[in-house]
Image: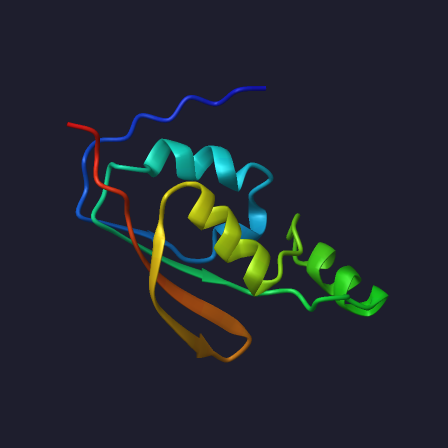
Length: 104
């Protein structure tokens, strides 16, 4: 099922408490690519090899994906976003990406 998203040019987009619930993050990022200057995102990253208990906890919270930091950065990179800053806060990774310039 395709969902159409109307996106206008924005300066900053914030995805906080969102990515864990997305099945199609690459599709969303392709819609946002070139439509903002900066994208800030938080994500509760998964272990490289998550134990069954970690997966149960994630599913119990309604989270539908289990990306590692490296996997998440690759998804953003493939959409043209460049990592400019990364921080940790509790069990969350906080990212600031510079968005690709829109085509002229």
